[in-house]
Amino acid sequence: MNKTITYRKASENDIDYLLDLRTKTMNPHYTDSNLPTDKETTLQRILYQFDKAHIILLNNEPAGLLKISRAEDKTEVLQLQIDPKQQGKGLGKTILTGILKEASAEGKTVSLSVLKTNKAQNLYKSLGFKIVNEDDYSFFMEFQGGFESLSHL
Image (tube, rainbow, N blue to C red; front, side, top):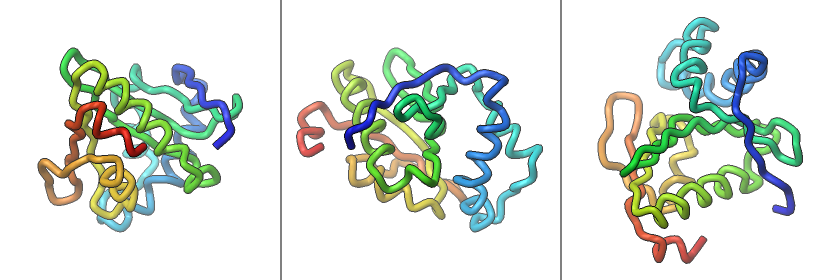
């Protein structure tokens, strides 16, 4: 992928973009899971820990959302959404690989959750994430491998 990936902090001006992105990327999974997809619920999900939200830019054009929380011992990927026009091109894998390498270099665990109806879990498993818990709707996954386990990426 010969494209430049950068990030900028999300702002209130991005809410319409994020509503559209989340509707396109997540509502099918929420529907399949019998979870609410109304605009108010979608907006609440967008605003959840909004201070940690970053717009993913691909060649300076919005291509998705990364919401990430970095603590001393752990990095949590709160939300990762890639615009459907950019899916399947390695963008999510590139972003996650960067996060995993950074966290591994710092000796941190990386965690995320994924709806059981979302095929993105296959990407996470291929990167070395393991299911550590689950509830009715989601798998909770962690990457605990060191830098050496990323050599295949």
